[in-house]
Length: 182
Image 1 (cartoon, helix red, strand yellow):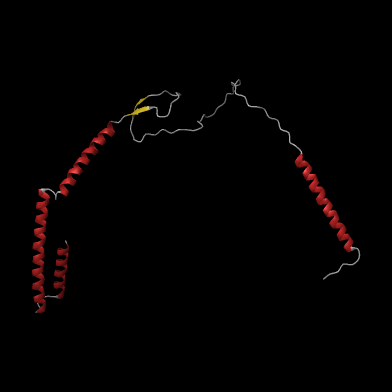
Image 2: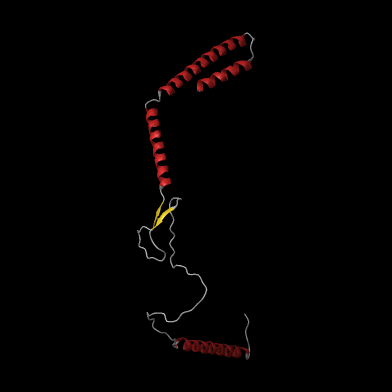
């Protein structure tokens, strides 16, 4: 611990008192400026006609722009309002040419009816031509399976007598498994 002797203790105390007085003066001076009212000049707004004009170059833009966009790509047949005219919500502004859309709608309806007929035929088991074609394909596949089974049996007998290779037997078995899967 350090002990101070002599005048150094008194000078420290004096420095602290002066510092405290300086802070007190600063705080009091700052409070006086804050309480003082600030004067401003104001006037009441009036609604009246504008009596002065200014000519300038510029661009006029709406406060809230509204974009009107058709859902279809088509031509305008007629415009029912004039430029600058005030319009209301829901008011008919223009008539679009709908000939292309009507043609496309008729085409889509025809496709829908055709698809519905195909669905009914498929639900009933298919057309007579499709059934005949499927029966023919099934008979051909069954004949191929019978032929491959017979060939497999023959090759296994020949392999047992060492007259055929194991590769030939495996190829026939693979072809038979593929035909049975189809």
